[in-house]
Image (cartoon, rainbow, N blue to C red; front, side):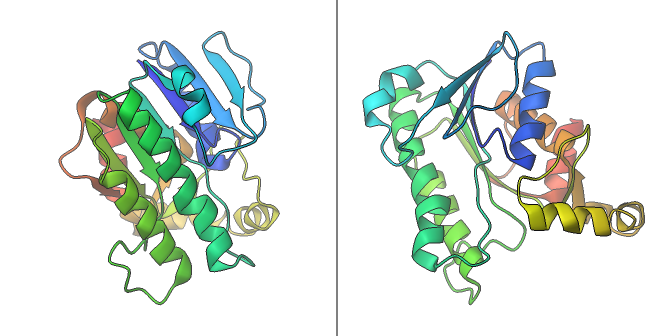
Amino acid sequence: MKVILFGATGMVGQGVLRECLLDPEVESVLAIGRRPSGTQSPKLADFVLSDLYDFTPVAEKLTGYDACFFCLGVTSVGATEADYRRVTRDIPAAAGRVLAARNPGMTFVLVTGRGTDATGTSKTMWARVKGEAENAILALPFKGKYVFRPGVIQPLHGITSRTPSYRVLYALFSWVVPILRWLAPESMTTTERMGRAMLNVARRGYSKPVLETADINAAAAS
């Protein structure tokens, strides 16, 4: 399997990259972003782009791939709706259009989050915008197209968030994780399970296009 990965420097992306590099069935990974992934592996190639809104000039380099895992994202805190939409919806939509045209047999997995609203009726800005991103991807002619809506994600294997406030929250509430895992296992997953689930969905598909946390954990274990 040849994989394209967006957002390899983020918490989820780091976990997905780790699982891709460990998987013997993954032949290569192309990590696309505005900065290098910071990881070294014979399987990995970094593709640094300054413009993530128009992939047409580099379409030839994005041909011949089996899966795309889109983990790139930003926090909505302090962002205007227009700015948040430009990153959260417009970048995956631009990438998806080119990748679908160049790789009709590809499986595309987009990470959004628990509470995402694809109906456009939510009063919560981030939920509406993430829903727009989901709709944009699910409308494209990929062989397989899925959205992951994780709830709480536990970072493993030394992985940390790039967002300072998130790092603080994870440090402060790390003691809650064992309790939450016991009381509500369907509400949380891990960076490792996210990566395994994406790989398994790319290989075998899933019974529905929108995967909540329980589905992600089930896909990871399949």
